[in-house]
Length: 287
Figure 1 (cartoon, rainbow, N blue to C red):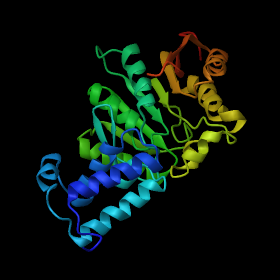
Figure 2: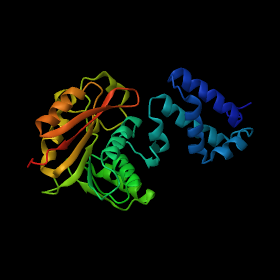
Figure 3: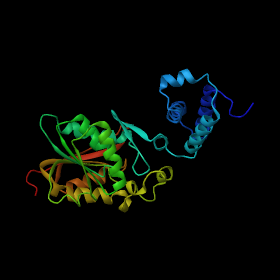
Figure 4: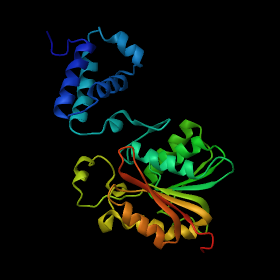
């Protein structure tokens, strides 16, 4: 019997075992299902119906190729080209960070701080795939959302995601933080900037994502400090700044916001209980 003459069900079982063993993947079974659906173009129902069928040689080779990529450490989202973020399904490429559940807390914090009772002008700095801007736009259709990124490739991904989701009230601008915005002011500034120290051991597991979106100088605080210092010039009185940061950066980020003139500064934990999002309101007398 040729080595490819196995059923789809048999291949799935073997692949799940390899992924669980070699990558210690907690959700290996689900990952293999997503890989199969992606490679063979099947819905979940179609996959179940196809499981007793013997794999064609070409399909077997393609499945082995993507499994090898996953086993080598390529993130699943990059292989299948998409990732879930809150209620959204987003296209992702190696040019953008893969949206993570921790960042949903940033969006939830902004939505809790500013209700839907009136329009808001919001800017998302360093939008990447557009995850933050688009989740805000989905939740608050009346808000005017601006999203910036210094990477044209990342902006192309974000624009594609906005078009696919039908979220036409998001404006995309190529800008290094506030650099291209002149004297524009907003009600809310939100950002998930690079905040990982260049010496952080966790970077070894993130080699397939853009380093410039991950690493910042000054032990990961340089971009957070730059945004906090510049934000008051681009916020209306009473406006808010909300940023994501590392689990051990809550105290220094709170200090950055207080020094920049923000009040009611507070840190919110992520779903694992670790410091993750800090925000504050601009004092109404601040200029």
